[in-house]
Image (cartoon, rainbow, N blue to C red; front, side, top):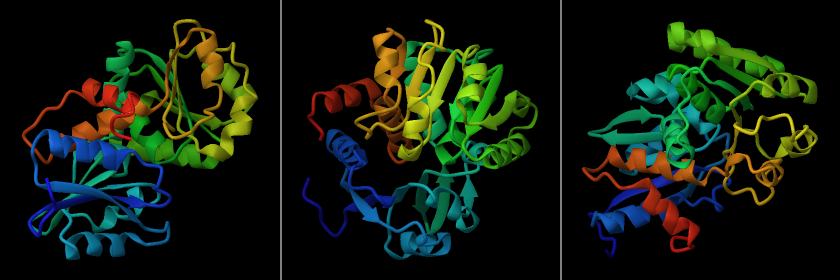
Length: 288
């Protein structure tokens, strides 16, 4: 469908975003469901500021946007409404503009949970989990894991104070479910202690932690555990191939990307696309 003056404009705000597959996924969904809409990349530096972003969304008449860090938290004070998932995570990754009101949502955690179910049939209730990192994605995943009844959710971060603050914030938002949360330093020793008992480990760190994580003992995880890496764009995810060589269950983040996009798409349409079909199209290179 050729864009016109009536075409609804969606986008991804952040930097860097040239690597993102989100435009491919969203434009595929628009075409599949015959929606007069287009999804584009909208570069914005980290210091753009939440107020400026909120004003831009309204002024430009954008239908909705996805956000990358640090915009996921910077924009919070300037939104008119938050979903329950966004309140739990303390961050948004999806903002809709409806009649001039900005509605914030977070589909990162829900997308991750859906991807776990689709790829490995994993039910997290009463499971022990370890999260590497304490940023926006880590918080969203931790919030949904705790909310879904995980027995333990431990955030390990190179800056332990940041992990501690994440747990404090999440406990305040989660109430009794927050009791499952704990924190620690991201070191080889602390990882070994926590991961030895874990059913699931989720790497939410960026490339700066690659060398550190590559130094962790890849034999720590049990044969029944799942190793998940959210950085689908990384061509050398730390430890991922070593865990695959051990025939552990793994995730490379692509299914989560698809699932969080599908959940957001459902909020702006009546369609209910199958994430597995979109995932298959991406894996076959049809959408890249």
